[in-house]
Image (cartoon, rainbow, N blue to C red; front, top):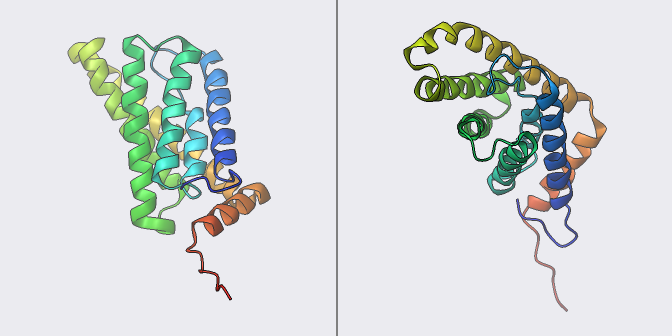
Length: 188
């Protein structure tokens, strides 16, 4: 979606980008058993953006999340950044294309779970190369279990929020109006 005239699309992009950074900061403070293991709460704004942004603004938000999270955590020039980059891009692409292909036939719980599982798998593949080697099989079951639980939980939160938030409904309505084809005005 392109920001038109008064910057209506830019405002939710900035708000959701700031929310990504805030949630990344909160997530950074939570204890982690491994440096690259996170519960993914910084993906909530990405899930909220699925129904209000086109692909351009959505992937700009993904980029803001990836780079912002790396700057906040100080991992921009480390292997941990590759984990975040791979996991977020695979998860975001999965969620975006599932929403576009299936529409409302798949809810946020399914979308969040699919995104979390593919993010987890990508990180396990990278962990096998950078950290654990063949021993990665020992952390695979708990990682997949944690990804499943957090994906479902984040999806359930998004399902509830999008169904009850007047702000979200209003923003979605406004941005969809901006994307509607405009009727040419008659000149007399």
